[in-house]
Amino acid sequence: MGAVREPESGEEDALAILIADRDAGRADRLRGLCAAEFPGAFLLLVDDLESVRAVVSDAAWNLVVAGIADADEGTCLTALAGLVGDVPVLAVTENFPPAQMAALLAGGATEVCDLARGGAALLPYGARRAIERARSRQRNAELETRLAQAEHVASLNALMAGIAHNLNNPLTSVQAFLDLLPERWDSDSEFRGEFFSLVRGEMLRIRSLIASMMQAVAVPAGGAQEPWALAELKGELESRVRAGEGGRSLCLDFRIDDGLPRLVAAREAVRQALIILLDNAVAFSPAGGAVRLEARVDSRGGAEALSIEVADEGPGIPLEHRSRVFEAFFSTRSGGLGIGLFVARSVARVHGGALELCEDGGPGARFRLELPARAPAI
Image 1 (cartoon, rainbow, N blue to C red):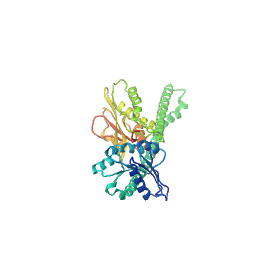
Image 2: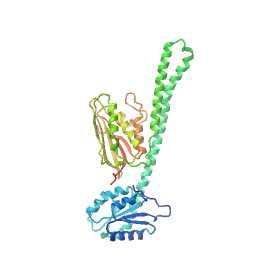
Image 3: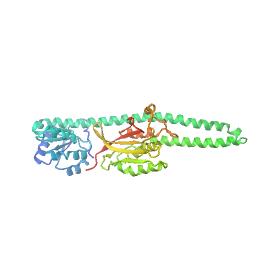
Image 4: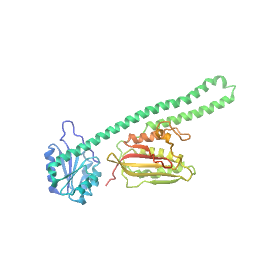
């Protein structure tokens, strides 16, 4: 996918601009206008989407200038925007009515300029504004990522404090028995039995805590992996629910469309988060109850995102507990450690997304996981 290239300091006009237009005459005019405004820019002309596809991954572009001759070509703008990714698109038209120009903005254009309405003079302004808007989005995204990472580190600090506290309790019990061991081992068979039982139970508890800690701190990062489809996980997630339903004959309602935008978050991390949400849904579901997973396209701050909701028909989460469900070591589940939702939210934050409890007052509990997405390949 295309990427925004940040010029080096002192080289604001050393830009890479891709001009896509079927009309050779207008394309040449656009090149002249761009060359006059950005004398040091690298300019490349292409005349169709296939040509865009061929060059967009080979270089980092600062701007795509797309000549749009009619409404039919306007419908191709969404495909073009999908190809170039985060690179801003300046749509250039001639004699387009306002409604059609608005449609171009809705279809993926960052800015629109009409040559028949003073566009030749306004094009440089539109180009610079489109580039700056893209850079602002990029800077904001970086700041949000750093903030999410800082919040994650703060959460991990709280988690480590909780781990230390929860490890200390079983170790204290084991230490107390060890202190009595020399004087009571030979004469007290009941003590020996209690000792073995306690030590075994506390060691299992410690191992469980350590495993949870490792799960929490080892949230997979996105890296440079290729975007992938959520539908790839559908069969595995359904099998996971079936394995854990314990003969309660739960009704599964998984709605994952093959045409949804592809995810850019780490596949293993998303799988981990969804398994946590589904395991909770199964644990609280009554016999014959429904467990639902639904994915749909959403918009977060103007960027495309995938919204994944997991819901059950259990007792729901009491009002007094809702503000604490993502805290480490807080759990209303029998035998639960209170780590799962903490980890799931960490996955979302590390990948630029969010996890929230939906407070709609309905039966059961419903969680919404939102993650950055990318349009399907054309």
